[in-house]
Image (cartoon, rainbow, N blue to C red; front, side, top):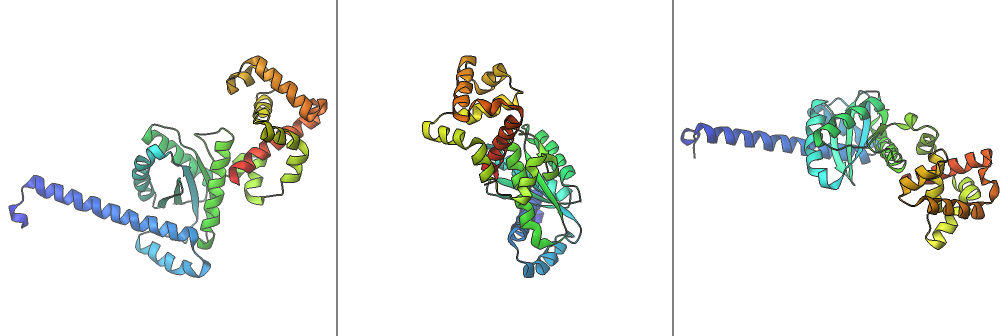
Length: 272
């Protein structure tokens, strides 16, 4: 059928469909490019620079990586928003393994993550959690930087800080674990090993109880409320913790070590 035979409404619908198809195709190309960047070897980066330039993206300037935890039920809506956001900010985006990844121009990972969390939470009507890392100026480090961003987001989720955004520097001492990966096992085992073993053998929740108790500033009623248990049950668990760890666990220095070990164990589980 020639254009002469089309009504104005049909011509408009055809034009809009063509534009939508072109936008989706362009997004697919950009998504593929970011996927390749995440796994690129050093010798492959030159042609990726060229491909990015053809798409109007200058990857020679500093970029940051932002990783957003994607709730499956909102994945489609999130993806549509991400495409527009990346385009508006002259960046790249893709989804992989339950994470929405952005590569955005800039030198402040925290500012980029804050922007994504604020706008995406507003767009989908639900809080989102994001980690960030960078900036990167060499394309062969994109993959490692992305993993750091994902680890930051996982730490936030593990620490109950959903709906927030952070880079390593904002995570306090646990942020050091994301980059340095020190050997934690000896300290954790020496400090709370008996507690972890007791839970594993008996299916109890002493670790969670003790961590909630210490996080609350040693408030028993707050602990019971947050664990959804009776205050007497919380008290009984603390008595059992004293049997397992010994009465000296409540001495200030040892209690500090225990609290740190509990946090380290929680973070280790999140980024393992």
